[in-house]
Image (cartoon, rainbow, N blue to C red):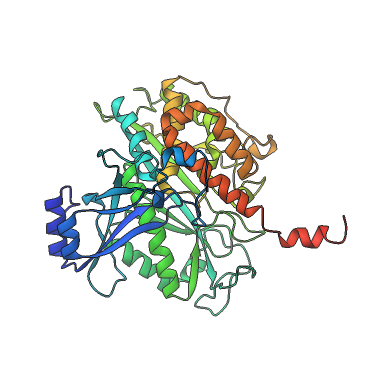
Length: 453
């Protein structure tokens, strides 16, 4: 049957697949799957669950602020949210022993309103803004990740895994078919899992780094694709463990190797005509196309912390490492942050190359669409096209998590579009993570400062 749309459809789907357990999931700020596992009968009886508000408003360390603006949004008494399943998100859990389903839930308060700082709520909010204009955003993510040997000691450097040849990669293998085939059993299982979960994955390639892969998704509506990326990350990590290796979506897991990105292709369709508004009837780029780019250029630097969410994220964004350092734009130019790939007028699109693989997919989609939306609404003109090497231009993005937080706090236009409650929770949590990181002394500091300063 097609994707369920109602609770009755969902019940039929669960019956058809003889489901005995249901994983009730909600993505937190990091993109981690939080929730509960319920027996099928309990899930059917409750049609939802309750969790504390703070569950979707905590950072990667699981810590919460002790005081401050955070508690102007999250009730200090730690009240419950009402979580309701979105029937369209139901998937089988292909690695479970017993028939198990997984369903993404939306978060509501006691008045029945979406919890504004839940990542899925933020993306819904942005999609509603497009809908009010008669626009339908269409996106297609490209997600990079590394396969590594098992690593149980955080103080030990990561290494590429051993392939079927019995050897690990020691050189760059960009687009190598044989290098992908080294891990055939793993990728066959990943594709099998994705097929059972109806994830619309397309092309698999070997990227530049040793053990670095990329998977492309077919274009679709942002909310559904964010769900698919959320499921896919969980799936790849699970499959890798079953083959005695790790899969990581860290932005920069290995020194000296390229970082991992989540490039998002995006276009806008006029819902009345079904036409791509980035192209004029004669096939030339439209004003909306240029205004969308203008919005990305104007607001991406301030929104950077949303798609470079950790201290590690900024290690990826360095010159000549296959990652952008500014928000120049150009046609078929991979040195820029905003690229327009070669395409037909009907398929004209814009690729945001700034986003890291470590970004929460819901927040990442919301960020890039919000910036483009503001560009079209405010008719922001872009800079002249970059036709050369954008790495020769100055840095135009924040260089650290602390700097990025300051930029977002100052950009009130983004607060209005994304929601002030979300921006408050997000910045407070990231400030806490940054403070925790600053308590750690790195090996570099001991090596170069201990006896020399």
